[in-house]
Image (cartoon, rainbow, N blue to C red; front, side):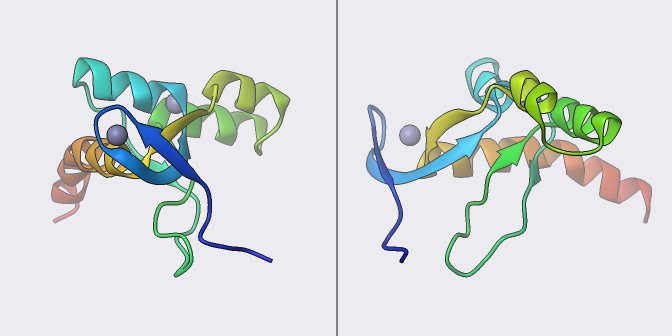
Length: 103
Ligand SMILES: [Zn+2]
Ligand SMILES: [Zn+2]
């Protein structure tokens, strides 16, 4: 059984979908520095899958999976859906440059 999902009350955006991201992405919202944005597969039920930054992606690649070590590094935090969108947009600016490299 899955209902509408969980909600979170954001002091900026009010009641929003609850999303989960690594602590560094939360940090990037605070200091405005893009850190990359990686997500698990999007699904129609959840357009805002759990996401993490490039540093976390490196750790996951090194240890091979999400385990105690990589999860401890990520320090996953709860984020409201609107903050999530903002973080995604901001961090994808960084990735755009990567795409341009391949053009
Ligand atoms: Zn991270
Ligand atoms: Zn918010």
